[in-house]
Image (cartoon, rainbow, N blue to C red; front, side, top):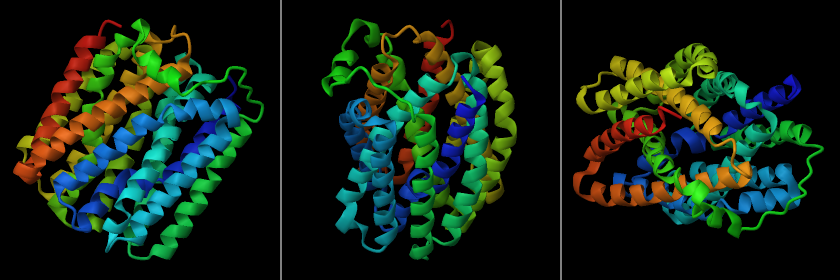
Length: 377
């Protein structure tokens, strides 16, 4: 597969990362600033993931009928609308709460399987660790710019509207070039991913994919945890930016390592990842320590994510249809996240901000379960 394909994937990630920051990084923080409590914010994410799980089968169905580009355009437009609603109604978002999470759900449900499809179709399995490392560097470099812009202009909606709309629409161009000759001889039905979840070839992976939900939940809410401690959006933005710069420098090295020795790296990544989660529980953080913690969290999370991704891609490469497999995987993740977050939301009604202890501890336990399940794969 040509380097041109890789460059187009890199270009897509630059503009998508620039435009998706409000949804990916600041959505929980914005909800908190609007007066939502922890239980309500966690409920928002639970409903979003649950809806994403239900809508995920529409991704291969849509791709096989109207193509990757048009399907991705639906995702991009949904992400734009959801982001604009969140920014537009910072003082009274409750009027648009339902619409906001529906648009975010549509965006994630269509986009996540498409990204897996692009990886399966246009990146050799032997190069995925390296390519993932490069993509991460690109994402972090562009995130630095995007987070700075969002942090500085959060109260200037017009600038953010223009920024989000422009960057996300530009992100459609690389995929348009990449898949210009795409052909889909097979037409997918909406029922296929549901059926595949219960197939004998897939059921063996469900426990591990379910465990992957805990680190994803932790990652989704870590910015809120930091914001609660510092109470300032500019300080939060600077902490994330510093962490992203250091992560960007380190991660490429680990990308190369994952290609050669994923099993050994998996143990190191799991150890460090769980250590960071435990530190979130037991350390009393000053602002300086938050800079260090966020840096280590981002590095260990991404390394662990990349290594586990490479291992699972290698172990499941014999699957009959990678598109249906990855869609079913997304559904399992989303449904598990929905169940977990509903429990966390109910628990947060009684323990409030101490719910973060539960989140961090469950993430720590889950990464070790994933390790012992996959260390010999």
